[in-house]
Image 1 (cartoon, rainbow, N blue to C red):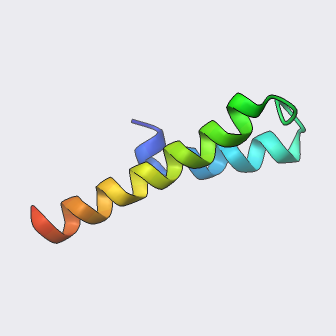
Image 2 (cartoon, rainbow, N blue to C red; image 1 turned 90 degrees about the vertical axis):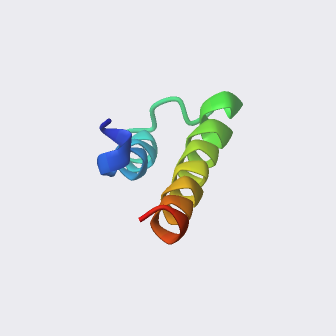
Image 3 (cartoon, helix red, strand yellow; image 1 turned 90 degrees about the horizontal axis):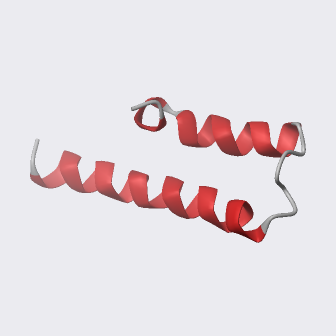
Length: 50
């Protein structure tokens, strides 16, 4: 729920601001992939459902 309210962007910003888990490839790639997929889903919902 928090990610839908902008938590993805905050998570990425916090990760790089505090240098937390920035060396783990799983997080460096995972956060942006999740954020991009959520944006795509929201655009799809906006265009085709609402």
